[in-house]
Length: 103
Image (cartoon, rainbow, N blue to C red):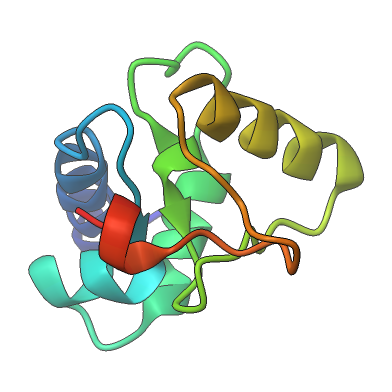
């Protein structure tokens, strides 16, 4: 990866690390804070995390509808379990109320 990409990823990780327990932010929210033009870059950065980087609460980032966007079922279940363990509730459609739990 280029130094510019690494720097962007580090800024993303720093912002995600600030999301408080029991709250979530959207990929777009994080992109706006960096600032970068695409929420997908936030997803790429979080997907690049290694298991040893557990201090970054990647699970607190959801899509703009308050839904989990991960494609792998095992990762989706893990993210949902982690969010539920923090008291974050999902409605019947699998969405988190961003007005209640948004950062």
